[in-house]
Amino acid sequence: MRLTDCHNFQDFRELAKKRLPSPIFNYIDGGSDDESTYRRNTSAFETCDLVPNVLTGVKDVDLSVTVMGQKLDMPVYCSPTALQRLFHHQGERAVAAAAEKYGTMFGVSSLGTVSMEDIAKQVDTPQVYQFYFHKDRGLNRVMMERAKASGIQVMMLTVDSITGGNRERDLRTGFSIPFRLTLNGMLQFAIKPMWGINYVTHEKFSLPQLAEHIDMDGGATSIGDYFTNMLDPSMNWDDVAEMVKFWDGQFCLKGIMSREDARRAVDIGCTGIVISNHGGRQLDGSRSSFDQLEEIVDEVGDEIDVILDSGVQRGTHVLKALSLGAKAVGIGRMYLYPLAAAGQPGVERALGLMRSELERDMKLMGKTSVDQLTRANLRFR
Image 1 (cartoon, rainbow, N blue to C red):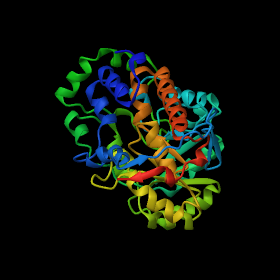
Image 2: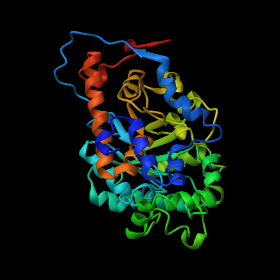
Image 3: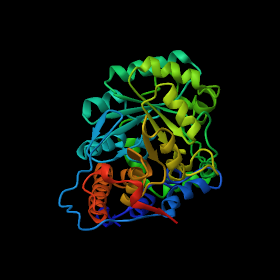
């Protein structure tokens, strides 16, 4: 199977599975507990159908949107995800370059493997910085100041990860950073030697956003320890309100799932929220993002930019979310599988296919711009 044989999400997933050692593939691929929320995230889109209009004159389609002050050429952006250079040695550099090519936004994570400064030098595309709330309040301020100095326009605080989810696939393989592999996990690396060759022949793996603050060398701190020991589960709305005021710009909360929390986000001055359950990787049994979208848009959609992520695999999924009132849609696994499969060409192919799907589906819906999509285009079963 080659990159040119990949035409959809599942094709990219299959190619990534062939090329990655299984502990790393399962880290991307897995959810928490029984993975019920992970599965529901995508199946939720099947609960409603699109109702197209015809003979509307759709020669040209404008997919552009403005979200959190950023003008994007299409309503899909690359959500921040951790550890990208583990999946392919180009990591965030590949994703940022592909996002720039398609005129969309790119998120860099606190657990990213390329520094926000390096990304800012490489691309001009809008950059989101996703970070976690630490027990050390001084560290939170230092990280925000660093982001501002590097020119980042949008701050995105993840609020659903005050502790790590129970990802049982990782427990079975021993996946962690640093690696603590089981015997079977080590065997899986041995039978995919090209990954290891690339890993050791390119720049040393690191977490540059955190390097000055935690010691990842010599197994001193693992990712699990980071979530357990450094993040602050006592974080509350007053703490976040202070951060919003300190940042004094576009500030987004990622992981909002209730209308009450959406209202609080508006009240403390946030400019955006991401309806997200972390791709089904945190609280299993929670609602899907799409299932919650309508009531949250009804509550705050006229006052704040509502974004959706988790489970998006198709252009039609994006159109359904936009029709319900989302301003944009974030993708994660949808670019991580192609990244793992083929680096920058893989991510570019995935984004190109998504743009083609959106243009084709908009024409079939009889729409020439995103703002023409409304709930009149949907029927729930």
